[in-house]
Length: 298
Image (cartoon, rainbow, N blue to C red; front, side):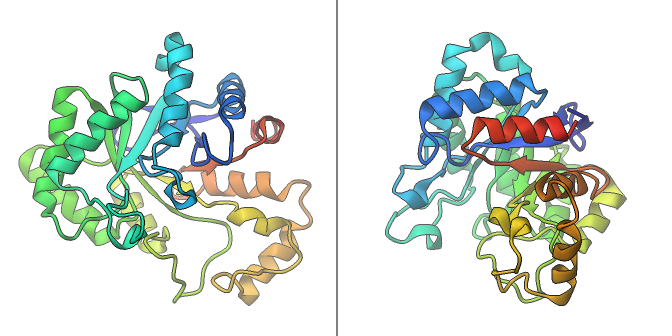
């Protein structure tokens, strides 16, 4: 599995990252363990989770991290073999209000949630800590200072952002440059082979657009980590069901994909070639599915 340098960090990450969003919920514990084992054996080295997976299914948000933590407890010698990435900031304060009332990324939340994630995952450090959402209610100076504090403590090795507009990433970069703080090395956004319509609404999710691509090309400090890349099986259908992607251009792309032996593998390869080289997250509850796709991606 090919590995690329993750932005301005010293990390080299496999271009197929393992999305652990369903671990401990719709993917049971033993199946999750088997998927991790297969992924690492096939040359993958990035596990991606968050402190709010999968709260939308009635979970407390920690099941994915807990499942990874149990695997690490059973395999402590393997901890150095992979990049462990988690996120904070988008955990709802009140389950009834959902994502309309999230924790945010103030200093207190960053410190407390980072410590909880370390404990939950049975690890002394997090290789990559993302801000899961952009918190407009907290000054960015406070946010970036708190992240620098986490790195100085040794709790976090590198930082990233998710669901950020390009202008907010640039503002964070200026703050880091002024104060000699570590800057983001990765940005995780929604991205796929189909291009959404201009007014597509993905809620709190931000699509990786051409503006971000130009920004990454210019600074080269960031690597895109793409999620929702396979659009829940959309590339295997005869028509496009999602109005956000129902365009003449995408229908033509779908037609061409039908000529490929494995549309999903073709799309994953396509994504890893974008933005100067990117990481595509792959989520599955089937070990054989993961293994076969990783073999094809070599």
